[in-house]
Length: 115
Length: 115
DNA sequence: TGAATATATAAGTATATACTTATATACTTA
DNA sequence: TAAGTATATAAGTATATACTTATATATTCA
Image (cartoon, rainbow over all chains, first blue to last red; front, side):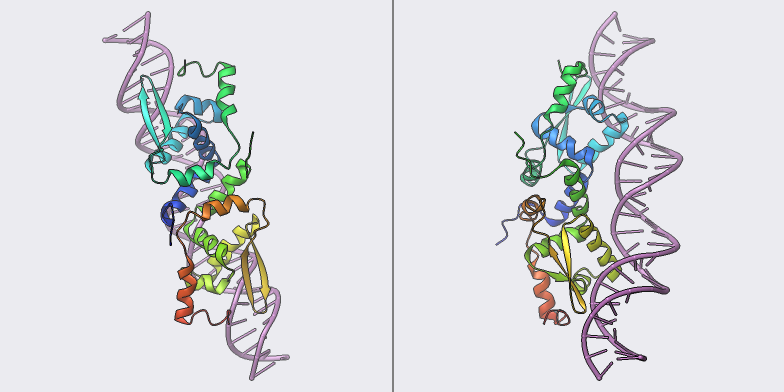
């Protein structure tokens, strides 16, 4: 009867987190490719701690995961999460954000971490 | 290229509103059937103004609409909204809430408005 | 090892949110 | 028309949120 993909409590929590434009775009970007903290700082033009705090919230509820690569920490979508299908159908309906990273490449602002 | 169903700003706003458990369940109920304010008060066991305030927020961004029927005001899902498909795919993945109104019927607490 | 770079955490602050109680408004019915 | 019922709005308050700056931690590389 219930071909439900996510619990109500969790859905509310996820929606609340995605209810911030910065985090929503972060998730849309991460659904496409991994990204490091400094890139998000460039994209959103906001302080580095602010970016870290957003990422921490997404990580705390298991939506993304971090992986250190040398000096940098890359974040990626946790596609193994049981809630990923829920998130994916949501993100699928949003405008593409791949231009954000493309733009960094053109600027040469993506140089540091992603050569 | 972008078979997008909703703008990013609007999606964030909608997610923020659905990021509250009360409103999320309200929307799930309304996706199934219309409901009046006093029923929500019964269901959520919270003050009547609190319910009105939640409904106002949902109405202000066009997700639901109200219709007075005598003494009562019924709220319904605005299925004509261009954002309804977005909301629907989201709600479709949530556990059924139809038991909430069924329970009121069994209690006899649905008597007032819905005879 | 020391300087530079990337990230996280701590602490402070302004604003937003969700509730409450009190009150106003609208409708119904005796 | 007066009393009762349903809903909305106003005002107050406690808590949550998103940002900032300052600082700590981890890594790289000369």
